[in-house]
Length: 322
Image (cartoon, rainbow, N blue to C red; front, side, top):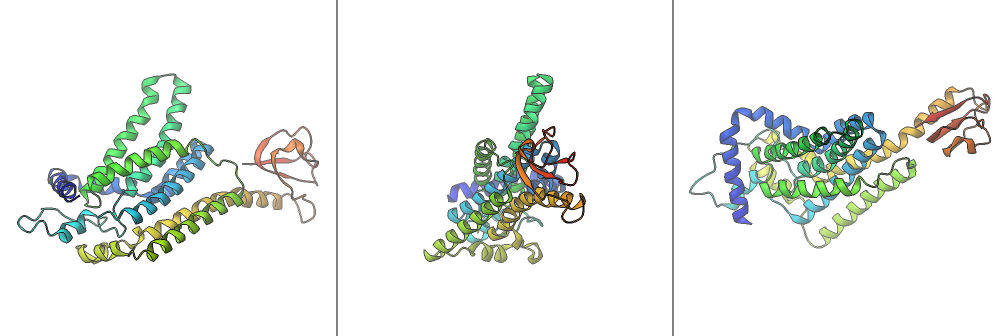
């Protein structure tokens, strides 16, 4: 691995030397590839375009980031910015590289979380967009455009991670390939229309699995905070140390996202039901499937939705809440 790491350092040095004038662009790209962007930017955009795509983005982002946490705990990947000093291989010739405000991440380095989550999440977006364009235009060239942009984005995010010394090239490649596979596989089975209990159970399963893995690795005598120690030791600016990039920090996003999404329709349904009339005038029934199966809603109401709210005080009213 020393040879692979060494070649990665020289590649980062060459990249910085050739493109240092584009420093701000690289920093913007690395922020776009941040797993947080999947929840804050990509999910709202995808959900607006297609409800199924939005659910798929949330689903894929949560699982891929959780698996990235697991891989990082088990693979003990180094990061370039601390490996340069820890390896003691550059005594005769010190690499001419710089650190940046986004460099000093505190989690292990392999595989790249930015590359892995970006590859997984954006596959959902581009495959949905590609299918939409093909169905509307029947143009192979136009429907292939999103996939070309997908490749360009993966390359750009990967290079930005190498540029800022956050990852070695092989970590970026491993993350991109793993994320692509996850995106393809997970997007085929999307938990659309599932109740709140499903998303809550899913998040609790991730939490329990994480705690069990953490306890098991500690029982084996492994120090899971080793990367935080090295990041603090070799970061050139103490204020650049990003404790929010430690594995447990990413877990908070994975646990909050799915239950929050699952609770949305329930809260919206109760809000609408409350607006239908004073207490006692609303049936309070929440039904799955076709509202014609309800004894409260009129038979002519044939809307299909995840949640149906029916008013007993107005027999002509049947609301679609999906």
